[in-house]
Length: 557
Image (cartoon, rainbow, N blue to C red; front, side, top):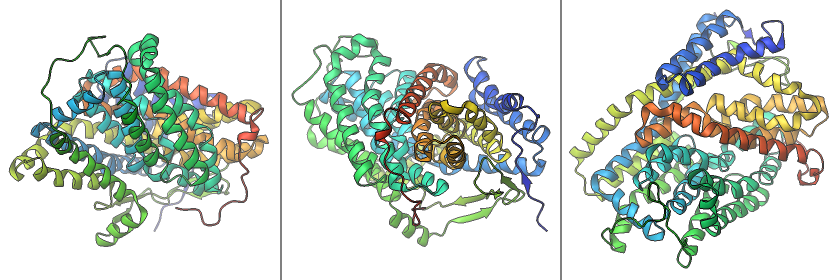
C-alpha cells in the first residue's frame, strides 16, 4: 500500500522572512564552512546535508523516510551520471599525459600564441563552449581546467578561468537541453524561449572573454589583447544570436564554439600581442622547446578529436535512442520518494503536482560513456598497452575517490532541498519584489543553479513559479521564464558540483574554498548585470522580446 502524499509547505514558520532564513541555512552552512572556515569540501557538504535533512524533517515536516530517500537519490545521481563524466574525462587526460601527448598539445597551442591570455580564450571559452554544447554537465569545466593546467597555468587560476568561461554557453548546453526543459515545464513556445535567450546571452558572450582576461591580467592585460578578445567573443556571439533566433537551441554552442575556434586560429596567423604575457613571467617568452611536426601535433590532438566526435554523437537524440535500444536503461522508482511529495501553488499551475523520483541508469547512452569510448580508442592510438591503460584507470578511480564522495554529498543536499520544497521557499522570497521582479527573475535562476548545479534542473524547479509570478504581476511570462535560464548560467561557476570538478581536474582537491572565494563576486556581478538587462527588456527595450505565441503542442521532451 502506497504511503500518503505529503504536500510542500512553503511557510513552515508562519513568517515568510523567517521561513526564508531557515531554508537558506543549509546553503549558508555549506558555502560558509567551505569558503571561510577552511573545511574540506567533503566535510562542508556533509554538514550542509545534515542541516538540510534536519530542516526538511524537523521544520518543514517532510516524512523522514522520504527525506532519506531523497538524499540517497541525489547521491546516486552524483556518482552517475555526474561522477561518471569526471572519471572518464580525467582518464582521457591521464593517458594523454602518460603518452606525452599533452606536452605536444601544449607546444602546439603555444605555436598559435605563447600568450596565456590568448590560450585561455582558445581553450576555456571557445573549446569549452563546444564541449558545453556537446556534453554539458561537468565535462567543459573538467576538460578545460585540465588543459589550462597542462598549458602552464597555475592550478587555482586554471580552475577559476574554466569556471568563469563556462557561463554564456550554458543555457544552450547539452544540445539545448535547458531550453527544451523550460519549454516543457512552462508550456511556452520552445523557439520563442530560444530566440529571447539569443537576444540576451550574446551581450555576455562579448563580455565574458574580456572579463576572463581582466581577471587574469588586469585592465592593462586586456589592452594588450583586445583584438583577440573581440574576435573570440564576436564570432561566438554572432553565431549564438543567429542560430538561437532562426534555427533553434540544439546546435547553438556546438557551431558557435567551432566558429570561435576557427576565427581565432585564422586571426592569430597574422596578429599576435606585442608582449607575451604568461603567469609568473609577464612579458617573457617560454623557454625554447622542441618543434613538433604537423603529423605529431595531429597525433597528440586526435584523442580530443575523438572526444569531440563522441560527445556530439552521444548527444544526438537518434543516437541516444539507438544506444538505449541496444542496452535498455535501468529505471528504478525510488522507494519511499517516488510519488510521495507534491508541489502546490504558487510553485505550480496545478492544484497539486506530484513529484516523480525515478533513478535512470543509462550506462551506454550516458555522456560519460561517450567520453570513455573516445578514451578506449585513444589507448592504442597513443601507443599505450592495455595493461598499462588498466593501471591508469584504477589509479584514476583511486585518485578521484574523495571527489566523487564530495559530489555525491553535494547532490544529496540539492535533492533534499528540492524534494522538501525549501528551494521554492527561497524562490518565493524574490517574488515578493513586485514591480522590480523583472530584475530579480534572473537571480532566481542564479539561485537555482547554485543550489542544483544545473541550468536544466533550475528550469525544471523554478520554471512554473516564474510563469505564475509573471502572470500575477502583469509581466510577460516569456521574459521571466527565459530569464530563469539566462540568469541561471551565471550561477554555474559557484555551484558546489562545478567547484569540486574544477578542483579535481587541476589537482587542488582541498582548495575548493579558495576557488569559491575567487569566483563568487564574479558570479553575482554577472547575474546582476543580467537582471539589469531583463529589467530593461521589461520596459524601454521591450521591443527585443519576441511574440510568445501559443503554447507549443509538440514541444520536444
